[in-house]
Length: 362
Image (cartoon, rainbow, N blue to C red; front, side, top):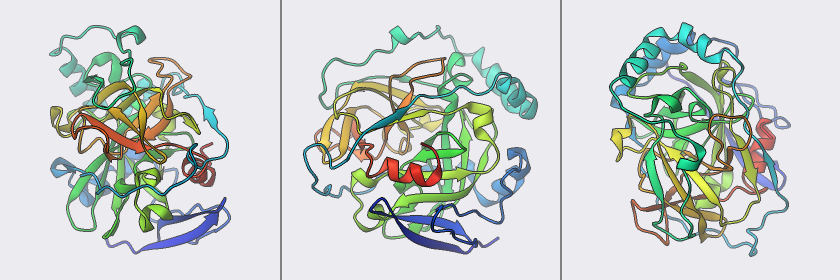
């Protein structure tokens, strides 16, 4: 089915934004545009058939990184005013039981696979960062490959974002859940500069080897900063996607933090095609550094496919609290080596807060 995509621009807190929507009525005050072909309360299982017709997930290729564009100059603090944060939240009790009942084949496949992998329990003390805020220094390891990870917090809030590109073909990025069914990813995962908006966006949380233990969720709308379209520097490479169904009820949500320092202890996550062929998520732990104006870098060996994956401060495995998204994977670092460091937008009141205020995820 052909969908007629339109673009709406509005001004919010002095920053222009663009909304992707399909044949809907725009409300400039709320900036919430819904796809009339998607029923907001539809169970994710109901849209699976149409999703499979629109996307060729088994042929999806990792999304490549956009070309480097110099960041716009601001003041030394990054040009933002103020800071804010919110801790993550667990999914409701019984969410795993509900998911297992809804998607029994996926759970059977993943639990069978667990018996083939010898793992040890991870604790927070096992996953420390490096001590120096320098490029190319990191600790990397598989994330939801392990049985204790894929069905627990915060790993199950993260997954693959599939889409069709304007140039043709299906690709994927990484993404993670914020509250109110809002998905966090990179702007280049929803809009390719020079060619336009992506279509048929679908999120599969905690996906591993093609199995989707928490279902798959279609998009209802997406939003990026207009400066991503017009300028394209790393500081603007973040996006939000509104999803149908109720993914938060299955997987919970990450927290967020904006207006923080450039140097922090961070954990980044993604589905890189260069590690495990993108079949499971990976993690890098490192001290971040200033890479450019309002762009932070960290050491990591993930490349294409990791785009949009969250960078977390106050990483807190298995429990509610902490797990604050502070950036997303954008592309290679100016100061580091390709495949050993990457960069993301530093979340500030001028990028993340603007988008999240519009979508109600603060």
